[in-house]
Length: 250
Ligand code: GLP
Image (cartoon, rainbow, N blue to C red; front, side, top):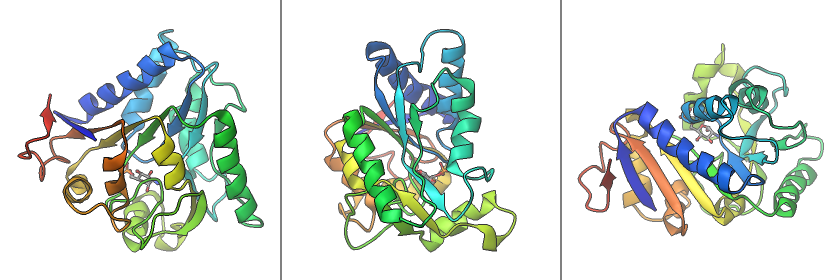
C-alpha cells in the first residue's frame, strides 16, 4: 500500500479525484466502486465540477456502492441511496440503471446479497474502489471480527460504529444497527483501491491498519496485501505514522 500525506482535506480530495478522473478519461466504460461517509464528499464535489465543465462524463460508467443500512427506507435522508443522489448522482450525467447501491427489505436478504455480488461479477468487477475507514478500522461495513467475510452479507454494526453514526440521526434509537455490505471479495478483487482518511479521529485506525498485525480484528489491515492500493491522508489522520520511513509526504 502506498501512503501519501497531504496538507489538508481539500488536497486529499483533489489527489483522489485526479486518479478517478484519469481512469474515467482513459476508460470511459469503467466500473467504479463508491463509498459513503463524510470523507469522500470533497472527492465527489470535484467529480461533479469536472463533469459540469465537460472534463469527464459518467455516460458509460457503471458504479457499485459498498453498503447500505438495513431497516431504514431508501428515501430516508440518511440512507446511502439518498447520500449518493445528493452528493453525486443528481449532479452528473450518469444514466438511471448505471448506478447500484445495495438494497434489501429484509425478506430475502440472502438472495439480495447473492444478486449484488453476481451483478458486480457480471459487470467485470471493480476497476477502481474508493474507500474510507471507520474509527474502528472497518471498511465498507466489514466490522472487526474473528474472520474475514468474502461475500456481500448482512452485518450487525459495532458499538463504536453506531456511536459514530449517531451524529446523523435525531435520536439514538433511530440509528440503524444492521447493514448490507460487500465483503472482502469485492474489495480485494478491485483492480485498484484509493483510500482516504482525514481528521484526528482516524489517526488510531490508520496506525493500526498500517503498523499492526494483518487481522480481521482490524479489517482495513488486509489492504496491505492488495497489489495496487494508495492511501491519502491529511496531517491529522497521519499524526501517529508520520515518522515511519515508508511514508511519502507531498
Ligand atoms: C461508514 C461507511 C464506511 C465509511 C465510514 C467512515 O461506516 N460504511 O464506508 O468509510 O462510514 O465514515 P466517515 O468518512 O464519515 O468518517
